[in-house]
Image (cartoon, rainbow, N blue to C red; front, top):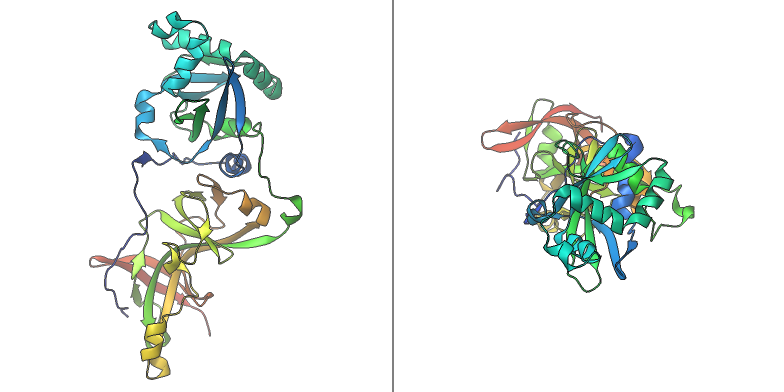
Length: 354
């Protein structure tokens, strides 16, 4: 069976000039703290030579960050994370030791000692909360290389905003994130309210008569679909965000927005093809929209309110499971992705009784 396919693979994902943040495997116990980093609108204020230094979460890492930032290792106990420190922050920290410190050609070891001295109070507080020694040092070859990466915006008084980063094992970053001050936390009373989640990937249009004739083994071609490894998270049938699929986790690539009138509106299953319906002469001519879904889950309204770009959502079923076929919000069957010529689609493996 073949659906009308004007253009296969029209991607709704936009490109930009920034690196996507790294998404390695994250243990379920670390999901909460990582989501808090991206979704709680935290702000950390420090003092640097009488000037306010304000740190906050960022969602993108400019390509120049890797090249321009000073690399340092943050050692906590026996573990390490890598810091990418913006150049203006390095200069401001060294200025507090006099102009000669700025002009001197300092190696990473020397710069690490000076920066740690500038933020001595902050390091003392960090050690007290963690119960372990914390130290800045020259970067090791492995610090943060295979771990999670979190982007941090850095604002210093009248200086331009810059982006730095911290990278390291997810569980270590989760310990650090748990110490951040939380702003904008949703009220506790909304916590028990469950919100259904759906991971949407593609859609097609087909006349009702063809849908009725569908049998296991038939193929439906996608009209529109997202690239491999990507989907959209539809929350409560109203909010939507693009996600990257990794192992048993989905990582938000942007904040949740209203699905209606968004660039991903075509993944909603309750849209009506009014023009096609008006032209239908008989019931069998009615155009039906079939939406293809990776899986479903749910989370509390409080957890949903805390999501932001970079947040992590645990999947109820890992990628590779059959896609569900949805019509008007109802699951009518399952299928497996297939390539048919130059197009992509689903081969129906199961249909549910009406």
